[in-house]
Structure formats: C-alpha cells, structure tokens
Amino acid sequence: MSSDDFTHKSTTPEEPESTRPLKRQRNDIDKEKSIKSVAGMKMEKSIFGLEPSDEFIKEVSDWIWKHARNCEHKVEVEAKIGIFVDQTGQRAELPVAVETILTNTDGLRFISDMTISQHKHYNKILNDRTSQSSQTPTRIQYAHSKELDSFYPIGKGQRKIRVTKDLRTDQVKDVIEKVRVADLAIYSPKRLFDWRISINMEIPQTVPQNQNMTYSRKKDRLSYTQQEMQVDLTQVFSPNSETPSHELELEMHRPKFLIEEGFKRERGLPNMCKIYLFTYDVN
Image 1 (cartoon, one colour):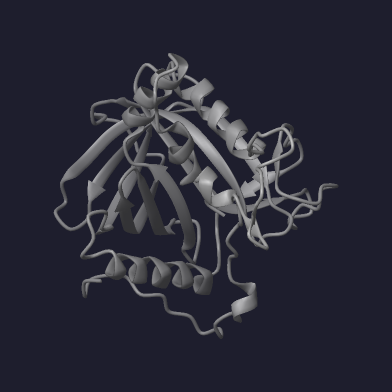
Image 2 (cartoon, helix red, strand yellow):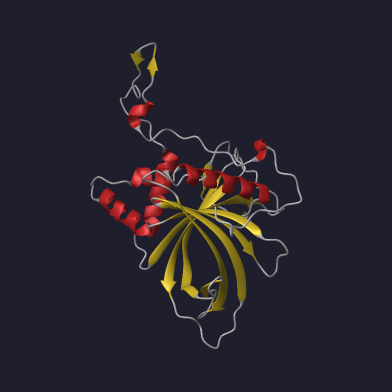
C-alpha cells in the first residue's frame, strides 16, 4: 500500500498462528459442485432429491431484508467482529455448541475490538488479496482515510448529529444523523470472534451552528472494496482512552443494490440475494 498507510506498532510479541482469526467453513453455493463421486458413482444430493439448505444464511438474509426494505433514508448494513462479554467482563459462555443467532442478549455487551497483531494479520491478508486481484476484472479497490468525527446533540433523547471531517484537507465530508434500526447478534463459540450485524438509516443533516460538541474521535481507516462488499480496518482514537481500539467491519457497498435484488426475489424474479448474502459471511 502507499507510504502514508498506518502501520501497527507493538511492544508485545506477535500472537502464534493458532490464535489468529479462523475462517468459517460453509457449503459451496454452487449446487453442482456439491455432488461428489464415490468409486465412479454419482452421489445424489439427498434421498429426497433436494439440496440441503443453509438455515443460517437464510435467517440472516431474511432478517436483513425485513429491516432494510422499508427504510425511508439511505440504509447502512454493516457487520462488526468482536466478542460478547457477560457482566464479569469476560467472553460469554453460552450453552450452545456451534455458531448461533441470539434472540436475547440481556446481560451481554458487544465489544468490537481486537489485538494489534490480529488487526495486522487481517491487514496483510487484505493487502495480499489486493495485489493478487490487481490484474483481474474484479480487482479490489484500496483507500486510506484519516477522519475526525464530531458529535452534537439534536432534539430530545439520545439523538445526535455526526460531522465527519477529512483530516488531510480539513474539509467536511459528511453530516448525518445515524439512526439504529436493528441489530442481529451472532455468537460463535468455536471461533475467536463473535459478530453483530447492524442496520442503520443515515439521515442527511446540516452542520450545527452555535452548539457545543459533546464527543469526538479520530479514525485511521484502510478500506478494501470488491464489487458489493467493503472491508474497513480502523484504528479509533478517543480522548478518554490512552490506546486506540482496532476494529474490523464489513459493509454492503451499495445497499440500494441489495434492496433492488430483494424486491426481485419477492416478485419471484431471478436475483442475486443468495450469493450476495453468502459473501457477507464474515467470521
């Protein structure tokens, strides 16, 4: 990447390979590839002639569609990786054996952070993938940004406006009110990370005048975009923390495309919903 990219510096030794984030294994979405041959004999998909469905992907797909389809403003669909912790501050230990969508997160808190070495690990993977894709039609696009987010109260309750400024040009890039629509909690006991999908509306606003800022943060972000997906690796610097947090999030690059494909599926037309959501499998 370019010379102005942030680099990870740590006085602690890098974690061994076994502690790095692991990739979930899922069935190939190409149904023909799922048919195996044993001693020259073609194996049927099942005795009923049906391809086993992936309930997990279907549930995530239906949930996203349910909450995103009627958003009146620009919709944001993002997934962050982290861990769910209990009231002791330790990673939650729930009575399930495999990855599970949680319908009740009472007593749990989601922390979207990772170690420096884990962040660096993902950085290397994404840099390698960017280089490998450079001569392909679906090459990964890379961007490095440094921004300042300033937050201002609006109206009553917890509403706030976020003003984002480019730290290199000192120009305002975005002014929005971000409204949370819904969260989907995914607990992964066999993995280093859990994850959480959030759907938000981004409502355009104007820069507040004669109003005191309540909070600010700096973001040093590396973005990797391929087709409809964008991965952001971000260091977040907050005034109330001595060290930055290290975040990884996956965002649907063009949520409008998702909405269009969802309505096609609803009408029984050919669509890309299944493959679109399969690429959203982040852990």
